[in-house]
Length: 325
Image (cartoon, rainbow, N blue to C red; front, side, top):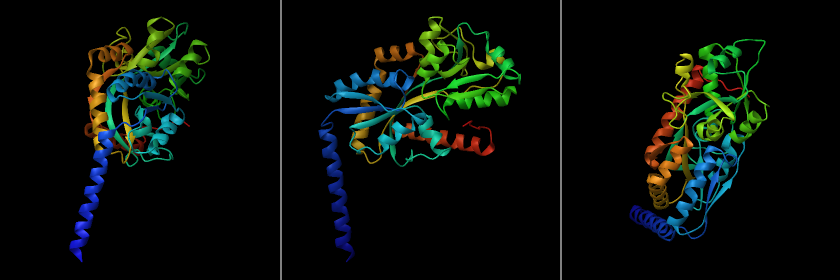
């Protein structure tokens, strides 16, 4: 009774592997969609639009970028988690919708069980900024204002649980300030309100504000990083500006596929995406935007995520991180 069962199981596995191999060999059979979970012109969206035409030429099919923003990236992430696991719908995201938000609030997907990492391709630090005409000339000025009960300071951040919001919560703890954060649907909207003097300050990944800072429309006060930004060399780190020990949580950018996507298809996408990122023109474009390129494949990316999740969970349990709602 046992032998036929074992032979049958082996046959089922062989058929399944054969099916996966056939899918991978024929992949892609139609256009591929890269879903971004932020509004257009944000850092994630910019990277997607740099990669898409290059990936299209390598896959031999059109690669479309489809923006599905909202809820700090969780709407677009959930969409991809529910998509057919055939490699034709993939996600590009920053960290919060994978390593933080799902463990802080209820979402409709499990970032570990419902998604498989493809490649981690870049990181960018947060830059805290103000309009060019702002009275805050330095981060010290902003911190001092944030200590005064009579002078409420609000900083726009790209969503609840975003890296900038976490960093500002830690800044409050270290500096004894009461700086409030205003969650936005994306960095583009923060920038619009800063330029329109609707909000006194904003914090987002460097690529979101870099152009306006370099043009003098926005003043960068500090980058939340151990080192200065490669394209904003005149802007000090938080440590340089205030002496506070805050190196931050750089925003990372990475690609995912729905769980169950055939391993050969994931491997093909991993190979193509990392190859694209290593091309000299892409390296230059990423650096010009203020990103540092990372070349991490599926396995290393998954390991990074596990470490980051564990770190955030410990910080939440200790009460080191509290998020305003």
